[in-house]
Length: 449
Image (cartoon, rainbow, N blue to C red; front, side):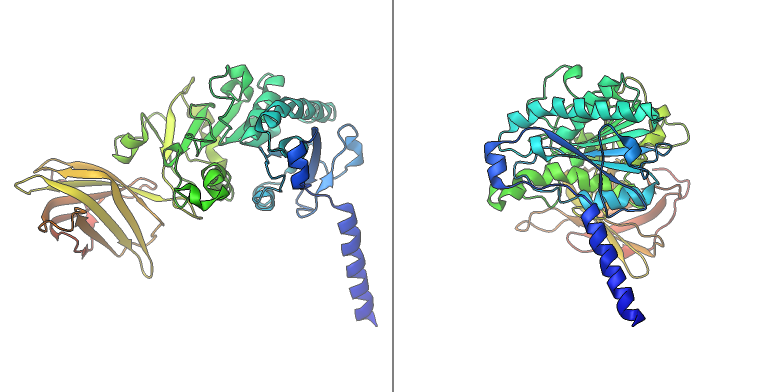
């Protein structure tokens, strides 16, 4: 009897919760064709009800006792929604942000306004959304909220909305994170007409689609360029992949940021004049950041706020994997050869642990190996090997119809960039083309070549 009562009570609680919870509202294709007027819905999530959104009143905050303004508040603001659908990443970012910090998490649902096939109409609506959010944050201030404790996370058009809101508060908002801020119609505009560094105390911006839907130039106190900021690994290269071809690079910004929220997968970034120079290993020094080292991309980048030069127009580069976990483990690889003739080719390095391996294929350009001249490379391994057992190296030219070559390595040095361990070396290695050679490296000696 009690079992039946317990089941009935559980069903009743679930039904009541479903009736009181609210969520992001998807639109139909008819809505997007005809267009929609702006309507901003603010959905509150907390650790108490992380899977249950509460529709906030824009004016009567006393009706929401779960909104605790002594805690920090984060706003997640989506971008253009041509299909009117719910963002695929929304549930995950809610879960991750609440797990990381005990905050008020407000999802800004402006699908009515963003859900239209007319991109220019959505752009025009961003100002109206910003006015709405500004009014709401003013009410929060009236109830004791501190602007410094507010974090706006804006995706695409949402990044510029965040900038407009921040400008309305004269840069007193604590932080704005722009995830591949929209480029079309915003490129070339004055700072006050888009996101810019004066919009918050700290503005961090990620670029993943600068050659299409994203913004190319710097917008924040620190600007991250993943894989050069354009083509992302495992994204389609041709239009034959359908709509995913158009949105994959752009949407990757959200996936990369989410991967950093729990602190287990953050990529070290390096200020550099170009992505090519970064890949060539020319920008791997981290002087000027105190004892912090080069910044980390993502949620924890604010820790470098006081170490960044101002104004900071540098571009910070990093490389990623094609799927989660996106972070790579980076090593600087220095090679000295003693071939009589210059050798041209590529290098593949593998790290082996107890039961796993990590690979770095260095092929962004043909490398030139000259006798006694040190060649520096950046090797980004697809995973971290905590207990290194051995290393393997393979030399290849990519020219299958020509005679095989040999690379005579006088010294190979592996320097970890993501931790403080000492460099590892191997001396006197003979590499036959396309044949992998394995060895156990040792700590480098003091000898120079």
